[in-house]
Picture 1: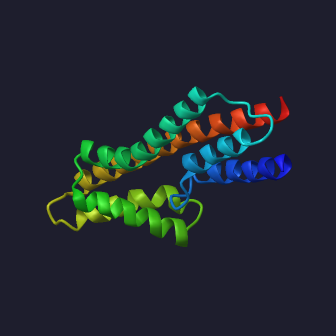
Picture 2: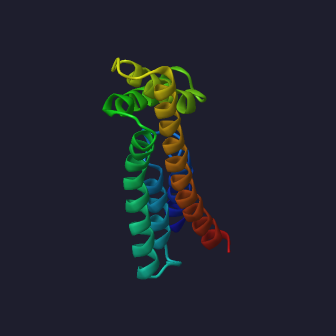
Length: 160
């Protein structure tokens, strides 16, 4: 049974890291599932404090992933249309222009969203789009750090 749990945990770990880049897949929560699966093996390498800590980190990073891009867009002068444009651009970029669309989509979407208000100049719209881009990168980096660290814990406890 342990072998099945370890294989499932490894799959969750890989999918979790991919989920750091793909917005449809919740990367850190799936990475956390890999730790839980490893905990259910006979080896049971973690104490409850470690699991609770990583559970809280997972919740925090997942919440921040929704907040940081919006904050970045607003901090750089964006409006709600810019935020919506960024989100729509992310989805369009993901499905129609992978893998670069994940990066370019939010930028173009925020720019077009800002331009659609009729109030923004090109300079203001570009600034908002840059804020969206920075927010996306920060959110992705936070997810990647959390999922990568959980992957390291998983591998270190399986092979160590």
